Image 1 (cartoon, rainbow, N blue to C red):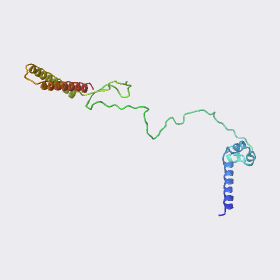
Image 2 (cartoon, one colour):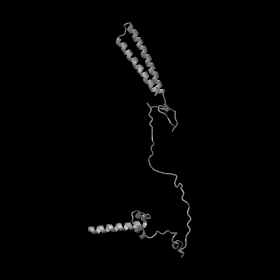
Image 3 (tube, rainbow, N blue to C red):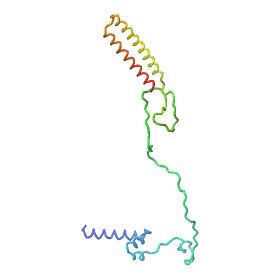
Image 4 (tube, helix red, strand yellow):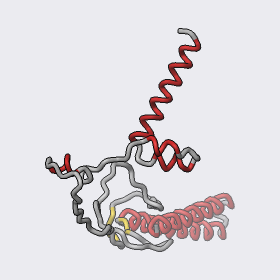
Length: 188
């Protein structure tokens, strides 16, 4: 198709679209008046309402009769008080609670949804295993202390070497650390 035919066809489509917009869009005359094109509002026929054309409205031959229209004052009202949506909800803030050690939950000290402070104990775990470990560490400490005392008394009589005394002191220090570890596990 030749270029002049394409331009002519495009202009024809634009003119038809503008005429349809002017005819069917209620605010078109106001828009054109703001643009300074007042002649277009005179060219469009006035909009007809069903009640204004009495002849068509009630089928009688009385086109000059007036029709009374009763309307209510505009008020605000709730049309839809519920909103349904599909999506994902996220909290503004969330907290992950991780215990120092795993175990069986013995007691829960807070209610669901309650406010908690930093450092507050939320729950206690079953501590039977930790109590047994602490008792075992206390026994090991007492045994290591008794062995150190024996080795020191033997060293005083030159029946034990200084290396044996040093070994007994290392065993005692290890027993003290094991007791501290067991007490810390029980505390947590």
